[in-house]
Length: 508
Ligand code: RAM
Image: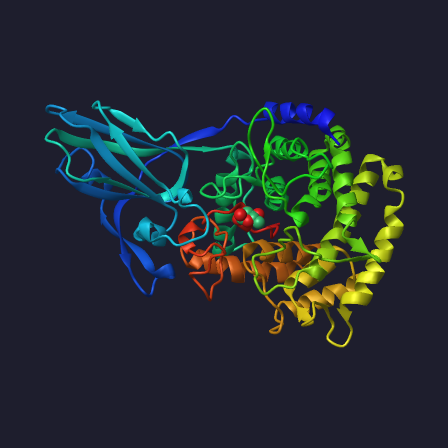
C-alpha cells in the first residue's frame, strides 16, 4: 500500500541515524559473586580487591577476575595487556558479562529459558599474536565483567587495564533534575530512570541493550514520552517512526517491532495493540517537536492502523478472535478483551486528534460518531455498575489492564473514572500488572486524570522498591513478591535495563 513511499522513509530514517556519544568507563572494584538466600534472586557480590591490585602485576598461568564497574555500561569492552617471553601458544581469554549478580553467579550452561541462549553475554577471544589491546567487536550491556584464563602458555601476562567504551545517543546536558520538593528516594528514581532510558538510546530506541536490542512500538510509546521530558532527542523518535512506516506490509500494516537494517528495516513480530498505537506516538511526537510536516507525511500510516484495528470491531465492540498477538501486559491470568476494546478506541481517539492537529479532519470524518458509539457500547458491555469496575471475560475478571485502557479511552465520565482509579490502586480483587510496563501505563493515566499525588505514591512504592534492592537501571520484569519471575522461563534472560520501565511520573 505504501510501497512507493517506503524506500524514501527508509532513506530518511537512515539519514537520521545518530552520532553516538562515547565515554570511557573504568571498573571500581574486583568482586566475587556469592550465593546468599537473603539476597534478591539469591546472589550478591563481595568486594575482594581494588582494580589497581590486579592491574600491572604479572598474572599466574590460570586466573579469573570479576570487575565491577560500579554503574551500568553499554558499550565495547577494551582490555590492555602486556606479554613477555616467547608467545608459543594462542592467548585464550573467556569473557562473561552480567547486568546483575544472579546472572554473574549462574553458570550459563544451566540456562533453561525459552529464548535463545545467544542473549546471555559471553565471548571467547583467541589471539595468535601478543596484542596490546583487545576490543570486543560486539556491544555489551553490563555492570560486571569477568575475565578468565585457564592454563595459559609459558609467556607472562600483565593486565594493564580494563575499560568500557560506552556509547549512547542521549545528551545529559539537556536534562533538568527534579525540584527542591523531591527527596532522596525521588531523585534516585528519577536518575536511575533516565540512566535506563539513556542506555536504551542507541541507533534507535532499543527495548533493552542486552535483550532484545530492538525497536518495539509499544516500548517506543513510553520511551518517547520519557525522552520529551528529559533528553529531548526528537530526531531519534522521528527516525524510529520512519523505520516503522518503512516496514509496512502490502496491506499497510506495520509490525510491532523492527530490526534496524538497510536498505529497509526488517519487520519483526506483529503485535496488534502496539501497531494500532502508531497514531498516538505520532501525535505525541508532533506535539513535542512541532514537526507538522513530518506528521502529515506519516498520517496515512496512522490512519491505516486504525482502519486495520476496526476490522476487529463488531457491533461497536472489540472481539478478540485470536490468530494474532494481543500483548497488553506480561500477565498470564489476564483476560484481554476489555483492554483490547479500550486500546482500539483510544487509537481512534488519538488518530482523530492527530488529524485535527494537522488540519486533516476531513480524512477521518466518520471517526467522531464511531468513537461515541464504541464508548457507549463498551460501557454497556464491560462496565459492572454493582461492582463499580470494568469486567472482562467469562469469569468477570477485574484487572488493572481493563480499567487503565477504559480510562485512556474515556469510557466513563471524568469524575467517575477518577474515583474508580483511586479505588483501583488498593483493590485486592483486581488482577495486578505483570510488571513495570503496565505500572507505567497506570502512572500515565493517573496523571492524565489529575491524580498526581497517587501517581507519585505508586512510583515511590513500586520503583522505590527496585531502588532499595540495588537496581542500577530499572528492570523489564519486577514482581517484589517473586524474584525469579520471568516470562521466558529463566530470570537470567530477563533484561535488567528496559526502557519501558523508565518511570513516567513527571517530577515537576
Ligand atoms: C519482549 C520485550 C519487549 C516487549 C515485547 C512485548 O520481547 O521485552 O520490550 O515490547 O516483549
